[in-house]
Image (cartoon, one colour):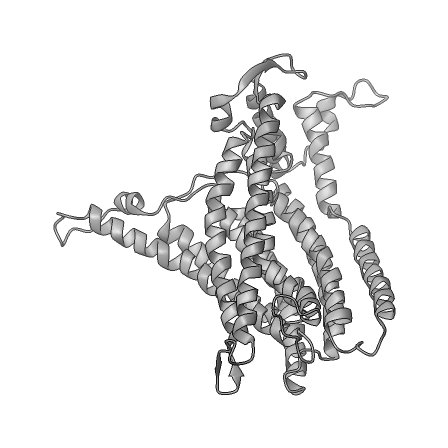
Length: 488
């Protein structure tokens, strides 16, 4: 839980420069009669590509620093099995220790993994077809009369209605698949909470990525091709699809913010009030509940899904702020405002709405970081494709010239991105030095390793600097104790 708040605060601080530049870009677009195909867009997309890389590299350093400060380095190596894993697992002789240990045979695991993958793929395809159906319906609403054009005066509503239906569909399908993903992951019988969470993250993100971004991909890169070939009744964008992409992304982004805050604030409060009314039935009116009674009626905090849902919401937001930022520069500003409120709402919810959670350890944010890196890489490709193929600035170029330009610029930006990632060390120097010193102290105090000194009269105990602070010893001794308990 604590690591989530560290990550959210770090992400929010990094949104400040991005939102500042995004707001300036939005002003430049507004100055040109709200034309999203502005000359400022290419420079903004390059900035956001570099921003995403620097942000992720900065978080890697902050993450390892936090893990060192909290004594969580190598936590996953000493992590205990899940109780659910113990309940249905077989025993075998450990190839490492020779002792009996619980394990899940591959002969049982692989069929479950195959079944889980097939079900997840089926749901992903289902949501893809649902989005296509929504946009076919949107094309029908946008068709010229008498086929079904919906408008107020000369202002067409087909695009807005289609985007609104898409926003509702995203929320509904996310809720449905959330239950399915948990059941599939339970059946896979993962050994530790970290392995379980990583598997659940992979399923959830794969689905939510298609569910959240398929409509934007359709508008940006597929719709025009269908319209040109008169398929599905699509109508060509004029002069390009930037305006429609801007409208769709804005509606979906704002709908996600509203739905997320309602789910996090209103729903828990209503449930708590209903339970409080039920539990206090028959009580004397002037008697107030004790703190213990208030904790009892509070909503239980799910140890896994509590932060899981918060992470998922923010990761999808990161995708909206990077993958199609060329079409909606104001997304960074909205994200900053939302996160400023979000971090306070999450803290209030944790302290006032839910019961006190049971503390658990975490070394890093897990697979979420992998998906952040994937989206930051895809953002380079998608935004460059928006500029080259969807926008109108290169419309006078031939298709071959645009493909060559896209390939060159995309490879150049990716090369710069990876160069920056390689040049910035993942571990800060002070943390690396502290870690080496901790390992040295641990080897002397716990493992009793002798010094490599010529003077035999100089003992190992005297070799240790007696000025070592107690805070240097605590994380090492804590992990030694955890490892000893795990082996016993």
